[in-house]
Length: 400
Image 1 (tube, one colour):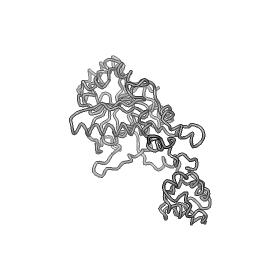
Image 2: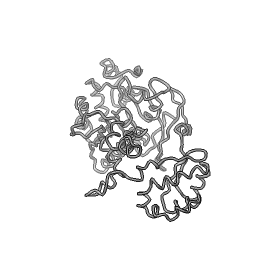
Image 3: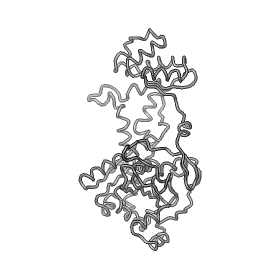
Image 4: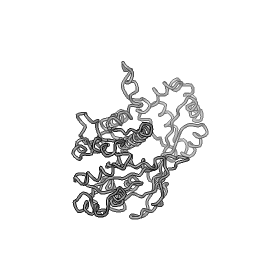
């Protein structure tokens, strides 16, 4: 990875000021950075939570942060200091996008609301992503992934499968909201390119996760009057799961009548051939628990590789269960200038004419403070005065 490498992605030339923390916002800005945007992340001198999320090679870097903070420059600013706020607004004046996940009350106290930032850059795309909609009773309530999962039906869906409410073993709400932030910002930039106008974009976590869950789980409850309870039956059977083979585990998803015919013929289940429970799409959905069980019980007859070969031959969706460790092991590696070798999670989207690139390693706290301030017109004396006043933290601040 060449630190001097220029961005080549479709957002090259776009400048983003990132005032977010934990994972949701930083994931969104990682995506924008991978797409070529110049992302300037604002961080307190003590460091952000993601730097301490699990083990890592140094106090400033967790394994999570090594990829989450890539393709960004980092400035350490105290936004509670009046001069620190001035620094943020001066940088915002040079940016196309401002993203924050501060709650409305904190934004008002810091004087970094949309109106404040727009006064410096009238055509700014200002994205405010936080727990609950502005203007609601809960607008200033704290919201984290676990809470949003519980409130938006994810835990309830798990209870319908296993009997007790559970959250997904991944920070689903954070990452879905991060994706939503990224596409919303890109849409607002497109509108600005057409009209010359900026916008205030709001991405409440609760609304976003609710919309995400009800795509399929609104189901029979969506028509008026409702035709049944919410919940998509095919997803809510405990038999929708990996099943054991002779030597491992496999996930198979027979989807059509031909798929079931092929499996039942190959396993000698002639009693199931032509069964009305898989004759139509609606029948297959309504009886998915029974059908998955019938298929799953037969998978111990062959090895995983034998079944995969059979399923490929008959164009039946299937895959072996992969381990997290194996997935990480397959990733490419790079050398971080401060902490050594690490695994790089490549950008998943491929653009033929504007390829994404990982051109910057995750920065240390405040690594680019002076660089960015000099870039927007401050001089060395200004930077020294800001440090002396406490508006800027030291680039070598001890992480805690």
